[in-house]
Length: 453
View 1: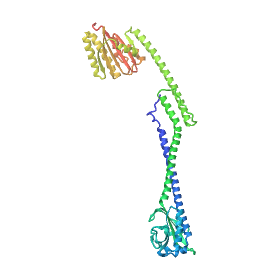
View 2: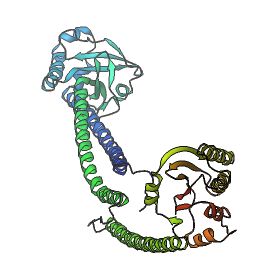
View 3: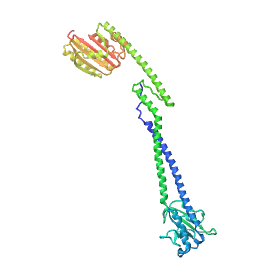
View 4: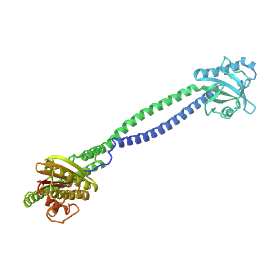
């Protein structure tokens, strides 16, 4: 009834919607998780900064500033004041095992150089007077000014290894800063928390991605299923199932579109049935006209001219014995057809007058094949008392309304007729058989009693 052009690719729209939706949701999910990870990472870092400064501040408060200020030489490491400060540092480290180093220092000069005072380690400790180069370390330089302590802004890699350092000032009874407490938390603990956070983020991402894919697939399927129903329905109608109807109950535009397609199919079905009825009536009328013409022509010509349908002509073509055949496709084939029939008739001992009449009839027939059809086949078959020459072409056929004039009116001619030659054929042939339709015209001529003048 109609064509959709190239066939629809099954699921193309669904795949496009799935990819678009999953891509968009995945991008949103990545941005959201990235933002949360960034926020939580800073929260984690701030928590560790707060912890190291809090621990450093606690240690600084517990240390006697006057006693710390009196520690000047290495020999002072054996005094009670040194041991008391060292014990404070060791107690804090014991309670917080992730502290790898805790110590006190005093600034030398402008702050680029510092000297160690008390170290919590008893094995290979720093000694009073050991110099530490703090070049490039802003936090340790600013520790004197921050009463609440300060921490490095990023993980540092120094002589204590990778980690985070915090500092707090040690003050004497007059409020003067006489040194600082420094401590170092190993990066492994921070990295462990970061890895834990990253694993949680990855797990949430994978779960969310799977959930997104599942829910998106369900939603996209619910959106595209009505469209797939319509596509399948239209294809069934296109294949000839005109009674098929599309039933979609979604309460939205898809339902309206389905009802519209059904209404359009009803209209086209009714239109097709009307056309088929008209064609059937036309065929019946043509059949009636054909039978009337056949009976009238047969009676008027006393059986000489026979109008046949295509099935009847096919049976006629099998009568007799096949002799020769020639294709008519060019002007030069007209002469070839004349020579072929002349040679055959001479073998049969045909009289010269009869031969001339037959050759003229064949010449007129094949000439009109070239003129009006462009292609045809001429065949010679031997009969008991003569010869039958049939010519079939693939032209537009003849107009039944003009057929009597073509046969009986000498000189009558139309574009689709055989013109003047038809009356010549009628004059010289003993029997004529004609079948014509929109698929072409077939003409058979019987020439009998070839030996008679």
